[in-house]
Image 1 (spheres, rainbow, N blue to C red):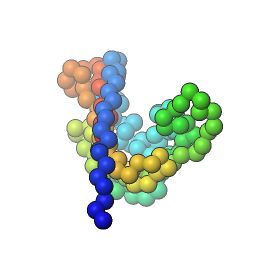
Image 2 (cartoon, rainbow, N blue to C red; image 1 turned 135 degrees about the horizontal axis):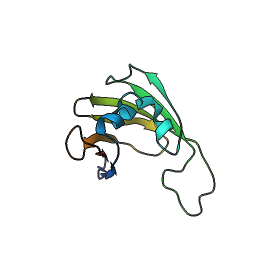
Image 3 (cartoon, rainbow, N blue to C red; image 1 turned 60 degrees about the vertical axis):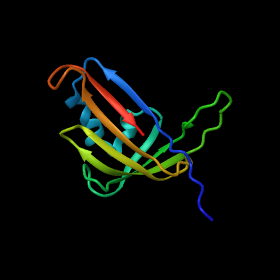
Image 4 (spheres, rainbow, N blue to C red; image 1 turned 30 degrees about the horizontal axis):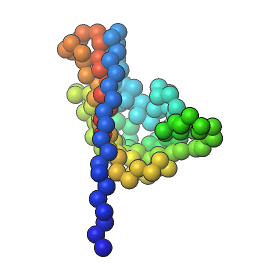
Length: 133
């Protein structure tokens, strides 16, 4: 019996930071890949499970008690978790890709890319953070 193909979930989110340079923001993603809970609201904890910081193959484990898709009547808090693997990291282009290996969210196939881009060329104030699936 052939497995039924599910449509691929795609999305993109962007934010512009007018007063911060791309090279100032990039370390949050590069050096702090396992500390996402320090700068991303909703994450309770995140830690390194295996691999080397800044190297493909690094696996992190993050938890949250915030619902992934909040509903108006969702008052119950549950602990959700995800194991994510760093697939690619390019400090020159300031981008990285990671995949969700296992999780309680129900995702079966999840690969995301994060890019930190200067708004008006390198050296200028202002950058754009782009997250895409």
